[in-house]
Amino acid sequence: MSAIHETCSHCGLRYEKEMGFFYGAMYVSYMLNIALFVTSIVAYFLLLDQYISGTLLMSIYIAITVILVPVYYRLSRTIWLNFFNSYAPEKRGVK
Image (cartoon, rainbow, N blue to C red):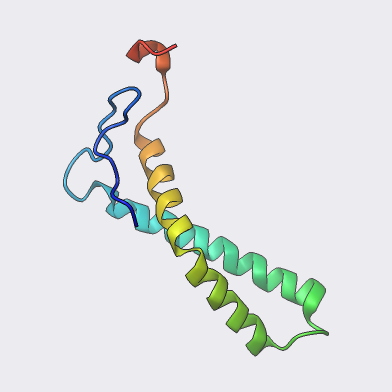
């Protein structure tokens, strides 16, 4: 993974407010993973129950989860950061 910048190159916003600021992003990542799991289970019982076994579904789910780890990592940090910072370009002199 590439290093995460300390500040925004465009507006100068400092991303990490304090040491350990992004620990809360773990909960966001957990939420995203639970949403994927629930969606997978519902889709399985509504659409795929007759065609594939539950074991195959779990194998596919685990593979997708492992593949999405980098996506969840960045996305959860972005969502967590947006809980505490609002985008207001007029306040930062950016148009």
